Every structure is written in structure tokens, then in C-alpha cells.
Image 1 (cartoon, rainbow, N blue to C red):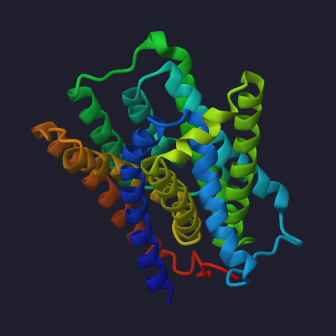
Image 2 (image 1 turned 90 degrees about the horizontal axis):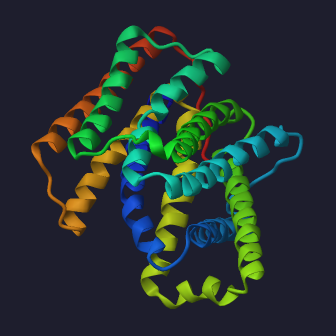
Length: 317
């Protein structure tokens, strides 16, 4: 049972990378119809609405009584609130390429924070594999002619803070997985995300007298499809699966899978936008995959030496 749970966790980690990789494409489409905050509002409206149905019908049980709700609220403050807010404003002062480069360092930041707060340990070879996956992402962006411009320091700082927010989420979610089911954490996070971004967005439109702009994206079927993908698939599904993953494997091992999304975004760009795939894309992708596989194969051998480190928990209670 434990081995099956571990296999499922790794399958979910790969699935998440694929979903996130395609989310860049859908985000570009959505932002063509609505501003960043409005897009986030509709994104979390979709995720919260979809999950509210099984919760209301009793198909998914959620209970927060007697549980560390304060820490769960801190989790929601890191992700989705902190992560997406920092990302939106960071990209206003920096390029998407800079965002991609900085986001690739998330596994390194997660490894450091997890070692401090969760006492997770990684071997030298695991550390080298994590850095190899990061180097693969940076290599692709640098070969494309992208770099980090110090003149965009405000954006760079904000985007680096998204790494801290996601790393903090990964570490805290692993800790909270002993108290909450994935469904309970996900429902709380989606609800807080929806309520917060809705208030911010409506306040901004009310102050500017542009409420019609808030509703106008709903006239586009393309925008609705993008919002549903971003909300239901890229937010709700990945949050559910991430919480499950973190109940099975270390935060530092899970986080390295995020760099696989770079490969997926390259493939999506080639398939749907006609973007060219060059030799350096293949080299960088190989480095990323080698880093991810190496980190987790070495981690699995290490876990075998310490049986019973993780216990299996169901997706919902």
C-alpha cells in the first residue's frame, strides 16, 4: 500500500508539471481579455465553485474543528495569495523570461527551507541533481538570449519572493498533511484565494468606475475556457495532488518536478504557437529530466534505508 501511494505521488508530480506547463499558454490567452487581477478572480472563482459542489453534496468531507487553522491560513497566505500577487506585480517590472529563470530556483530554495524547518536531509548527489535541473532551465533561457537585467531590480526581488512563497507553501503543506486531508487544505486555499482577489478586483473597478470591464471578459468563450483550465485544472487539481504528494515524499524532492513544466511549455509553444525547438532546447530538457530523475531515484534509495518514514493518507476524509 505504501509503495502504491509513493508511485501515485510521483505520477501526480509529473502530471502537475504537465498542467503547469500548459498553464502558461492559457494565462497568455486569458490576459488578452482581462487584467491580471480579474483573471485571478475568475480563476479562483472557477476552482472554488467546482469544489463547492461535492462539498455541499457531502461527497467530499471537510472538517476544520480542532485542527491548526491558523497555520492553514498562513499556508493560504503563501499560496495562492502571496505567490500570485507577487508574480503579477513582479511581471509588471520584469520580463516573463526573468520570471522563468528565477522560478527555476524554487527547488533550491525549497531544499534550504525544508532542511531548516522539516529537518529534511539530501545527499551531495541529490543536491547536484537539483542544481542540474536548475541549470537546464537557465541554460535554455540564456541560449534564447534572455538574461536578468539589474535595472529591473524591483521585479526581480518580487519574482524571487515567489520562490520563497512557493517553497514556504511546500514545506508548511507537508507539515500540515498530518492534520488536514488534501481536500480540506485545497478547499480552504481556493476559498480564500477567490474571496481575496474578488474584493481587490471589485474595489479597484469601483474606484475607477470600470465595473463593466470586470464583466466584459465573460463575453468571450475563449476566456471562459482559459479561466476554467486555470482555475479547475491548474489551481484546484494541482493543489489537491500537491497536498497528497507532500504527504508521501519530501518537499525538496517534490519541488524539483516544477522544472519539468519548462519542457512542457516549450512543447506547447511548438504545438500550438508554431515556436521553433532548437538544439539547446533538447540539451536543456535533457539536463532538467536528468536532474529530476537523479534527485528522486537517489531519494528513493535513501527512503528504503529508512522504512516507515511516511504514512499513507487518503485523498479525503
